[in-house]
Amino acid sequence: MPARLRRSKSSDSLHGQIAAVTGASRGIGLAIAQALADAGCQVALAARFRDARQISHIRQKLGADTFAEPCDVRDERSVSAFFAAVKQRFGRVDVLVNNAGIGGPSRKVAQLSLADWREVIETNLSGMFLCTRAALPLMKRGSSIVNNLSVSAKGVFPGMAAYNASKHGAAGFTNTLREELREQRIRVIGLYPGATDTAIWEQFWPQAPRQRMISPETIARAVVFALSLPPGATVEELVIAPTGGAL
Image (cartoon, rainbow, N blue to C red):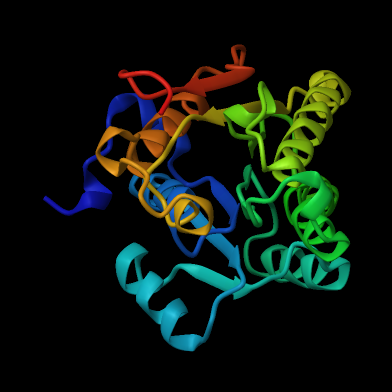
C-alpha cells in the first residue's frame, strides 16, 4: 500500500490541510514534511535548496505536486516571497513548522567570531520570527505552529554558545507567541528533540554514536500525533529523548 494511504485515524484530521515547513531539504524537516504528506496534507517546503535537481528529488519522494521553493529564512525579502507564493498557490497556511536551523562551529566564546555568531542567531532565531510573522496573516482559528527548539533550549552544551543562545531565545519567542495567539485558538507547540541522527552532527561531533540517537522519522511521528489532537487540546511542549539517556 502506498505511504500516502497508510494514514491512521488519529491523522485523518490533517487531511487536506496546508502545511509549510522550513529547513525541509533533509533531516527532521524533510521527515516531518514526509509524515505530513502521508497524513494527507498539501506541503509547501522552504529551504536553501542547492539546485533544481534537489527539488526534483524531493518531489519524487513526496509527490510530483509538492510545492518546494528556495528560501533563505535569514532574508526578509526571501521569506516574504516564499509566503506570497504559498498564498498564491494555496490561499492559506494551516500548519507552520519552523524547522530551519544550523549548529554552527564548536568553539568557546573567546574563539567565536561575530560572523559565526550572527549566522547562527539569524538562522535559528530571527528566521523563526520572520517566517512566523509572514505566515500569520495566512493562518486562521484552529491553525498550528510547531517550532523546533532542541533540548539545548532547556540546557547548554559547552562550546556551542551561539546555538544555545539561539535556542533559548527561540523558546522565549515560542512561549510569548503561544500566549499572544491563545485567543485566536492557534496552537503553538515547542518541539524539543534530543540527540537525533541527522547531518548536523558532522559539524561538531563526526564520531557521535548515531546508533543511540532518535531517528528523524520518530520525531516526525510525534509531531503528527500532536497536530492530530482535537481542536480543544494542545501539546504545548513536545520533549523527545533517546530511551538510553543523553549521549
